Length: 584
Image (cartoon, rainbow, N blue to C red):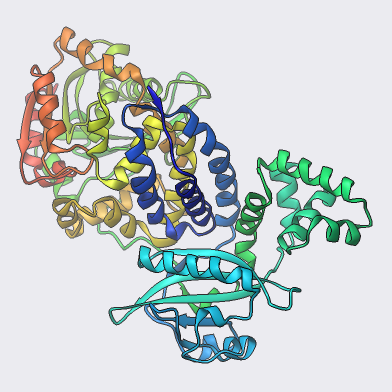
């Protein structure tokens, strides 16, 4: 197959987005847009190895920056408009219209730059050769629209000072503006320590990085360091080798990403600090049960519905939705169902899977361990989305343990590129990255978790289901909202972050072995029901139709007006099927 090709301009744009997201996870949505624009159109019927290899080192570096910066940056939210007094009085902030004319600015900025309303962005006191890149950068951000931001390094016209501009598109009263916060470079106290720990740079090499970012050339660095130009060149080569940078531009971009936390302590001019917490829930407390597996690992699980009822396992997707809406839990209780909701490996206080173990098989073994602890030999399993793989592995590991699979919004392994391409953007970002570029997935996944920490779970839910109105409508229900927000605390909360397990689970969905599961279940006669909504953002209606044709032995139940949370929308239909297979 042909090798993937991506032009140099698109490559540069994508890397800019990656490093911007690593510095400010709140811009995570731009990563989705970047992949939709520059990556996914290139992958069909292609060998992606070269492209993955090229980007891998950049994504790995960005992952390190993300981990460092996320631990230092406060949760923030873009203000609806700029306060023209108070907070802006001592900060260099300028507001430009779509013609790049100054419409307002802080007194500090107007005095510092000797500018006034009506002046152009090109009137900034910077070196002439830095003006064209600034204009190109500003126009590009305006074209991309709201919620885009970037950082630009320019030099003051006196040639002695380096200025970093944080440029962000903001909207107010249906108008679009460009806000620019300027700052002289500020080097964090821990900068050298972080570079040493991340890349093994010596103190001398760290200082050379600082001087390069400060716009000094080899001759100037040699003079200031009291070394020969040859020595400095050799040290620069060593820095390139250790950081994976191919040239000074890439090195500067890496250094700027690290500095951005400290460089913008005055972000309060545009941002207002906001502590994000989950909305209060009305769900009653459910105790956590624990069992020690044969390998010594701790496994937690919940019992929902009737604690003394007939057992059924509920598997809740990679989001870790361990609770059901109250009306669904009440329904299970009335029907005499003991709904076992396992907290899978790496979520909550359940120990992660052992190193090098198969994630799917280990989760399946953990489920069997919970069954043994509860004294259960066989039961039906309810799954959401791609979690239908786990009961298949349970059956393979212990035939007869699964009475039936009730797959709500059942996802099946993708058999071609078209099926992957039909997913909605955020689902595709995760699953197509896992499918085509697995080495890039850790950064993408960790950036999404950092995005949630900064903006809140509700923002992410609305992003995931942006084009899934039936799911968003369900989320307006207080019981559904409570189940989603509280149930997912095992995945992400002040106490937990299951990003590593999330990554392993996404990768497991695209393990070629999964293509062998359905033929095995068919051969063994395991009852299988798949309830699919045709508005599911992760499983397009055309893909559902293809699965119906290919797997005619499965009982498909189609809901034209349902999305991924079909279980919450039609719990009676799900439980009616479950009752046919309960072991009482």
